[in-house]
Image (tube, rainbow, N blue to C red):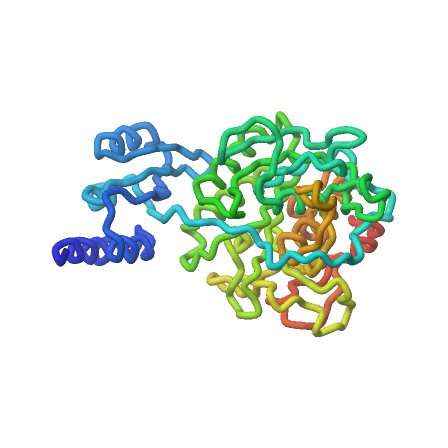
Length: 403
């Protein structure tokens, strides 16, 4: 056991800038034969390095071109050999990823209803989550879940075995048909692609999220994907430059897809923004109370994660209602609607608002979308690492004439 501990310490001493520290801590505490990792490599070596991984006994190898990286279960006895390969740039753990749901209640509150003439018609949103149940508000009078892909159980039909994904889909695009219009989402005509990368517990792995993001990259033109919604995250306390999820969403942003992330529910402490919302590029959404108004200093939800990021970046970019939001229940036999709190609700509301904006301005780039969103916020007059630019004002967003 002592020799194994020395082996781990020698890896840390010689390769501390190329391997995530938590891997070493885990190996020292829980010695195992293989450890699941994301291995980032230099460009142009993908085929040769994959052959090397196989020769060294790596298991379940999968390549992700979106970040030029491999997922693999790496044999611990060969970890030093792999780190010594010049083609390796960084090795990180296959972290658990968690949905940003704070609490669920049976209270009935006001819904977010679009009253501005735009409905998100023909705007396509890729929604990464626990799945989407074909709720009546999404499937009637026509089915607006235009595609579904399951990265957990590989099922072909649209489903949700947790409920988080269906709730978010309703915030974005529910049409309120089962409530006679009482509980509409922001963009009731938007089209949805459900990408199930979280399981029935509301969590997943970096690997399953990367699989979904890789799919988006490969199918963005086929399905005309304009917006990507990620209502989950991982606490990644290491440099953003080596964060595989941040690298992946940055790639999609550069491919002209507007990416919206939940800030997380780890407030009120500072520097608690979850990855990939720590990316400087993407739109990261914190949570406000539904009663929040300009100048209302207590209008923020205590649970909403705060900045700055570890790279000293200002986050979130804005806030939106996140407490006791009414949306779709995946278990319609119990009740078609329910209420919950969390920044996954506020990020879904902002995603719906972006669908309205892109219906009005279909030529907008992600950078222009982000600027328009920030220009349409009302300040709550609190620190920028709590509120960003402030609370989103959808009426201002749709009435502004952006030059």
